[in-house]
Length: 265
Image 1 (spheres, helix red, strand yellow):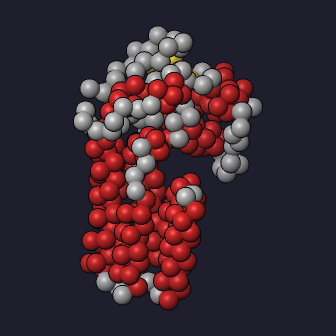
Image 2 (cartoon, rainbow, N blue to C red):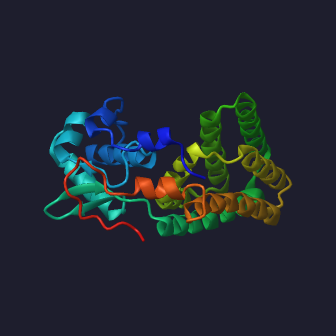
């Protein structure tokens, strides 16, 4: 499916970094370097900062009203995580979207989520069941109102609740790290949105299994649920609905320094 002309126009030129940062604020949690890292990572995941876009230390520091030191340190952390690429004698660029990395991240995510569901079903109590049913009802109301953003917010709360029930906080940290690339793909799909009711049905099946303490059933329901994200990644194949938009986004961006970034083949 070819993306609409107006959508290609939206991504034709990267919005200047200082304009992107104008409405953003640091979260105040932890070191300044960590705050800069999280803000830039979030903007890259949300496609506010585009693949291969040049990032100037000076512009980022000015946009966040911080010195260049925490920005430089955040760039190094982002590069270590594969979120940006630091090209010698050229500068720092947002990493292009990498389908292989997205699939690897999804494998980690799906494996941990399935194990979490299995564990949660064994340890859940009445309060846990009530919490999951409340979240399920909230997501149902979002679907009825056509509130996709609200649904996604509740979805994050739903999965976080499962990890709390399973008492696996470190696993959640691993998933957060693995999700970077798949989350960029998910954000691409806002232009070709999937049927969220299928995801909601998966959640309902999962809640029923957890309430029954059916660990194997909970794991199977989560595996079905995570399989839908595999379908989203298929959109990056040459025959997929995201292929043209994906290749358009991953091109070298005009109006920046000459990038020596190698695009994924």
